[in-house]
Image: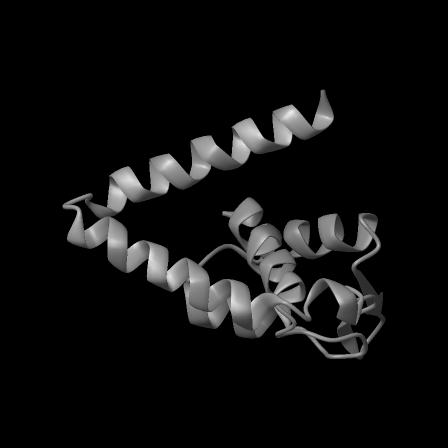
Length: 117
């Protein structure tokens, strides 16, 4: 569960939904919302801090310490529109959601592997 919290915060940073200086929900708030162990949330926040993405301020909370540069976000809207068009085409072709996820995931892995080679 802590991995999911870490991934959600990272995704929010990638999508520009969180900016530097913004406060994350307190451990207590997350525990109340998700009904999970406080240690799980604390572990996720420590991982984010270890990665330099957040900073914990004693008695004040956990704050985003860095965000992605604006250049990484400037094309998101256009790319999202293109991706939504592709999803509609895939659905028209009869591809179900799980197959779409598998296709996107495998294509991404292959593209990253080619780029790394």
